[in-house]
Amino acid sequence: MPTFETARSGLLWGATAVPNAFFSEYMPSAPENHVKVYLYGLMCVHSGLADDGNLLYEMAQALRLDLDQIETAMRYWERCRLVERISDKPLRYRFVTVQQVLVQRQNMPEDEEYEAFGQAVTALFGDRRKIHGKETALAFEWVENKKLPQEVVLMLLQHMIVTSGINFSFAAAEKKVAEMVDQKILTIEDAEIYFEKSEAARDGIKKVLRHLGLTGRNPTKDEMDLYLKWTTEWAFEPKAILEACKETTKIGSPNLNYLDKVLEGLHSRTGGKATSENQVQQVMEQEKAEIAQVRELLQTLGISFTTIDEGLRLEYRDMAAAGGHDLVMLAAREVVKRTRVHTLDKVKQYLDGWSKLGLNSVSAVLNYLAEIEKQNEELRTLMDIAGTSGGATKANRDLLAKWQTEWRMPAELIRLAAELAHGKKDAIKYMDKLLIGWHEDNVANAAEARAAHEQHMAKWQQKSENKPSVPAGGKRVIEQQYQQRVYDPDELDDIPEDQLEEMKRL
View 1 (cartoon, one colour):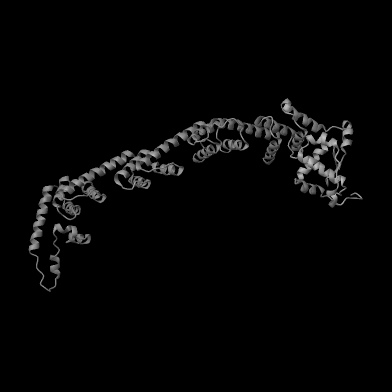
View 2 (view 1 turned 120 degrees about the vertical axis):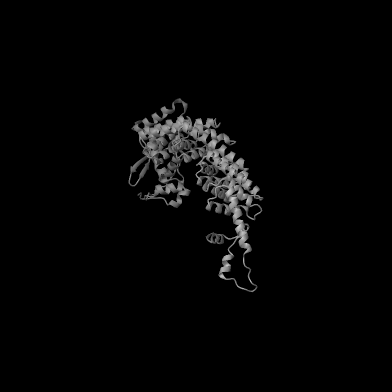
């Protein structure tokens, strides 16, 4: 610490002499922040400020720089011989006069490592670009401060020349350095892999841009990062990416963001399994065919959709899982033919109903529908005989199946039952009661059935005529109640099921 020192408050009113040689010999090639640091340090030295160990921190605050930037600048001026480091812990520097350095320059030992590095940097650019000392110094800082091998820094500069042109900005290269340090690309081997991928990404994204009609410029870092994501994280082959570019023709102005969404969708829907050109082409063709099928389904139902999104396609896939597109379309046509509400939910109901019956093919369903139509036609014929209308319901088809299939009744018996049911309130129910009786009595043909019916009617008529009357105000006795259990077949429609069962037991 000096014996005499200047009050800090007096700095503003003093002056610092800077030799003109500094402006002509050193300032033109020095980075801007390095010049600020030198001049501020020179001011502190000439003002006699004592260094209490915080002077570098104060300098950083005053110049609005990081402490690392201050130390980097001081190392630069060390190489220029204008500053000497006299202590590492704590850091202390001595400023050497510019005149002294210029006079002694020829006699000073050279910084061989720095000079060799500078020559290597200059050789990279050749006659195509003049490299300033400040640029060489900045590149050397990456060696000293970021701990990158000189070979890696030279590889980086060569990479920047190839990817960004001979006049690339060293500031842009410094950002790449920060990225490499962050990813721990600190060896020659790692750097070779890193730059190989980067250059492949540049070439690949340029081809993509040409496919999209976006030419006339170099790809940006963000665009190259997108390509690296597609090829490394999602494992798409370059030709597969170009194949996916065809999807961008669906929009007015093809762009990389839309392509990114296309590839993201392909990666997600295939579980990352479609990565080659052929695989992507196959998936895209399948999806186009699926979209056409969904559109056909919606048109059949009279539903208008401007966009067939993934959700709608998933819904369609679920419907087509069991029997395929043809079965879905058959269900849609049945919905339109038989219902007033034409929705996808109705189509699902038909498909679910057929599936529960074990009908999972078009042929099986068509046979089933043909059988239903045949039963409906037979029921309509029977209802015509019975003098009524309707009858083509599931409940009635179940009754017809019972008579024909389960009991194997001849058609003449069933037609006779319809004839005898003519004019009844519920003809089908009356027919069923008649047929139940004939089945239980093992009646084999219409002649036997007609004879049995006439005999039954005669007995009923006789019992009806012998039925005792009930005195006015009198009471029925048990015997009278048994005689009451004589029923006219015409009244079977109105008798509850429990009474009909009781009647059979008598």
